[in-house]
Length: 102
Image (cartoon, rainbow, N blue to C red; front, side):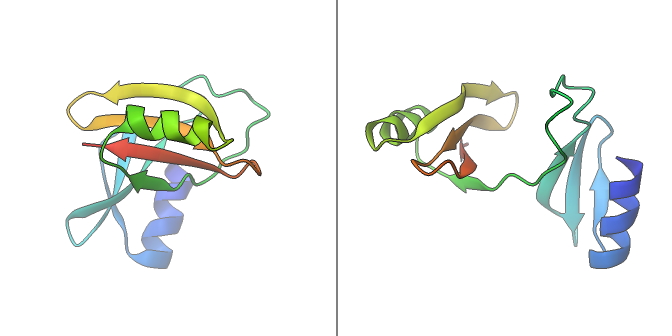
């Protein structure tokens, strides 16, 4: 996590907010986030990665629609306290992305 903070700060001028879940900020505005994957129990075979989030009206409805259209729900909809609701899904070809509703 410390290496990522240093790298993105030097390359893009990003600053950070928080400790366990780090918010990447640019000009005081949150533009992304970062978790310590070991601390949240990510299996060791999963490499560090970026995950694109798409804003949706309803996470639950969007997750259902993903399944209807042949995709899969990799992580069922769940709440992020004080922020909103998200799920991790994949399209029929296996491309993984997240959906989020405030």
